[in-house]
Length: 322
Ligand SMILES: Nc1nc2c(ncn2[C@@H]2O[C@H](COP(=O)(O)OP(=O)(O)OP(=O)(O)O)[C@@H](O)[C@H]2O)c(=O)[nH]1
Ligand SMILES: C[S@@+](CC[C@H](N)C(=O)[O-])C[C@H]1O[C@@H](n2cnc3c(N)ncnc32)[C@H](O)[C@@H]1O
Ligand code: SF4
Ligand code: SF4
Image 1 (cartoon, rainbow, N blue to C red):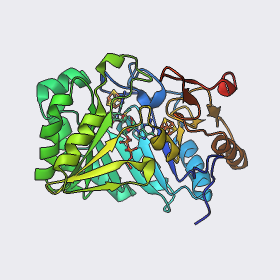
Image 2: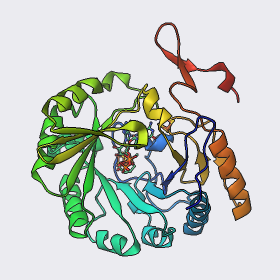
Image 3: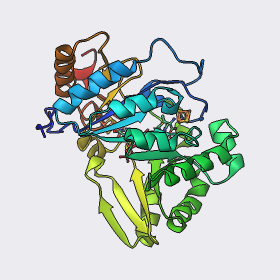
């Protein structure tokens, strides 16, 4: 395996997150759409989306640089009819995973596994259909539950359930922790609500309290290398906390480059001032662009944003207009 590229903060890039579309059949109230804003708009295929060839060309270059995992996301990645083709053509050296709202997994999960999908995360913010409908602006609760079943039936266990923890869902955390403890093949990922790209800071809840509660009831706690995330083991279930907000340790352990649906390389979820188009690039040009994007990556909290005397984060002057 080639040695991965590292940025000047010593962060090796071993993973890529590829947004395959910014279209979506849901309209979740909190959605950051991987840093690109609103998902609302037409649901038909759009001309601005990377073709399967473009995605594969990029992944082949990333694999040459020792990137050993890819996450397909969106928008809703399963709105892409050529997803199976993309997964099939993903370099074998990469662990291939996807984050989806789950509605299209029934009928397609098995084909995706045949194509080489290794893992899936399904977003499920509550076990209550009414709360679910209110958050996602959709009535597809049953369909999502069927999607989780389809993924398990296709052999994708453990399936991670993604739950964004914010004002609307805080009351459902305990039930979700019990749910994954009681059901084999499920894990829970509690994602701190990120207000950076969506506004509405009033929806924040204190994720520290969730950590404390889990630490009290957990049999065991582990730290994952990626982002130094904590994993709590509760009654046989696994609960991981994703807490990137104002978390310098999280950013210091961040080793992933993103690609937007339009084929822009993006060094950080929270930034849009470092985008670099791959457009019609040839492989040698993509290699050069990838090297540059990695070289220019900086931890968002702690470097791009620094804490001032009042305890607020502000952009370090050296990055303004850079
Ligand atoms: N700020 C920030 N948030 C992230 C990062 N990675 C994941 N997140 C948040 O966590 C959400 C869920 O991530 P997923 O796409 O399900 O997957 P993951 O947790 O990154 O990866 P796995 O656990 O390996 O499946 C993202 O949409 C973000 O909201 C990151 O590098 N930075
Ligand atoms: C943008 S979605 C794309 C994939 C797919 N449509 C889905 O919902 O799983 C990826 C993940 O980001 C999470 N997410 C979206 N907006 C967020 C926010 N403001 N804060 C924290 N997580 C967020 C979602 O819950 C989902 O798990
Ligand atoms: S399903 Fe995913 S992409 Fe769609 S609105 Fe919800 S979080 Fe955003
Ligand atoms: S640097 Fe921080 S905010 Fe940016 S993608 Fe990495 S973990 Fe997320």
